[in-house]
Figure (cartoon, helix red, strand yellow):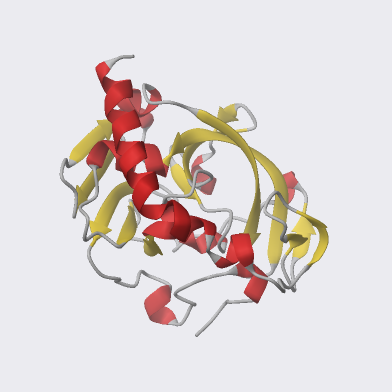
Length: 230
């Protein structure tokens, strides 16, 4: 096992000891009466949260703050800081040197549409957290993007193994209009909780609301509770 692999393994063991029970108890894993329809997903929730229209992959809408940052992979950097023992910054090459994950996910937008079975490739956020080693008092992470966007997550959501920083979709580089070169996906919450063009993960010792949360969107964003606005 390399030094990097040992550091990741040790960090993951510590994180899972602290957070596994809370991750398992979140609404997307345990809600006894989830809203929605269709067959169930891998956690027993309906594939289609309430009020959603399912779109084809090629129909994926483009939603942003009105600007598309020009972030070439060779210039992309990810900073991980805040309430961590080992702050770090990763280049494109360093991100690709970490363990990569292929995962098919459903993508649910609060504006009323879903896309199913998107084939993403990327790095688990928990892998990045394992390297940065959040302090015991850390409770949340703020995700910052190159266009000024931000969104907050409690660590029991952020550290789930299906939360990814993705750089490929369907075996191809993630298109810039969908957040390339790297965006975050959080399939158990509404999609605005996954920042496009992500550049920074800031670990926090208390909650702080992001761009849409301070503008009236739900702070918790649970799709199967139709949890859209305050």
